[in-house]
Length: 187
Image (cartoon, rainbow, N blue to C red):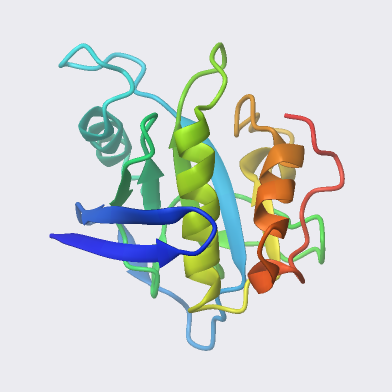
């Protein structure tokens, strides 16, 4: 199934649904207000392409992890977990903005397919910005952080992420103007 979404600044993009079973109900009363950005690739894919979305989803499935969205190098977006459900992406976490823990309870996880060696693609930034804006129409998003910001002693992703570029693209539209972004914009 494909779902189309529109973004005034970024044009249109489509989301393909590829459900993961590795999720659960959010705790009662949870309010989704945070987006966590991750990076991944499959370290040893069976099909040979470590950046293929199917291989990345298989990698997540094999370790019983999940995210709400995967964004491919070409900007294609897969939805793995419905936003109203709790995906298993953040692990032990602490938000730098307010000290909350257990980020999976109130966040949406987005994986950017890439590696420590390669920069992210323009198409990935375009899809990420459009997706964040789209999510912002359904939830009162107050913070967007990298995995490294909420788990700095165990995580280094999102790799090669240009927070300044992301912030400037996000600012081109006032829909998420009240969002807290990391103070340190280097990754």
